Length: 414
Image (cartoon, rainbow, N blue to C red; front, side, top):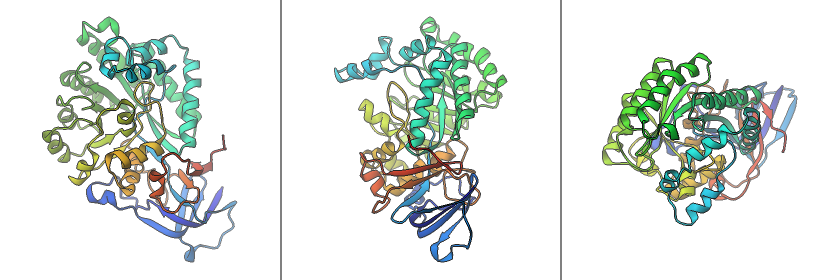
């Protein structure tokens, strides 16, 4: 199937195949081509250029994109999209004054989701999660990372990971799986946390690897959750089975998680709402990708990741949704993009880079996704008629997407 897009107002995020991530001042640059054409061939980007150089061909489908823009589909590198039920009661509790930590201490939070997941069949979890996955695809997401972590037992964690694997096989979107058994301590281990760490290391990780259920491994390294020492033990065990670390750090406190992640050669450090001078210094000297989750800060009313300072200090940055039932019940990358601009003071160029090429890098996918590059997978967003790409984050309450293409095929309208 050959599709020709012509008269594209602007073709955004044009990169060479050697570009894997963008950092510092380069994040403020968004290579674009005005009055352009683009050709997809089956599931790949075949060619693009100015309309003055459009080749003579007979496409299977021709799309007139006059007044519209095309950019790579969003790459959402941090979600907990597979879960059972919801936690809207906790949302009301927060409105009434309880903090996220207080709700967790009362048996809410992650443990609440774990109880719901345990009592829900695998088929039902798959059906619920399928709806969420289809929704984010319609919102322009073409690649997504999904974590386990609401199981907190060997069988329940495997159940979640099997659902993620089934989603990856059932839908054209690129799905990456992360094992997050170290999300919280289940009730039976509340007074014996190291025994749960041993269960993760001795039983869960080998099962995950044996069944090929995940590429990444994660832990919630935070006060009241997993200590730096426990996190390191879990990550090192995962690494011995080929699992790549992606670690929750510095959401509420700075306890040395960033330094541990650097030592462990983690691919990403995610959250980063609380940063010390030492954290900045160590992170800017490393190759670890910082991932900000602006929708989480919005929903919980906690500080935003100091993304402006990170970029100004020369760092790379990705943004993701953190889609989950407790702290971010939304997988809308368009809203994350707008919030990054409005609340974290990213420019539209920086935010689009963070949500595309750097988001792809944060999932080890920038060789095939995240930019308009010949030979990359044709995951594309075709906007409605808009005056500029700055209008995307500006008009935060509007759906500005006309069509989404995943693997060279337009998604059917829902």
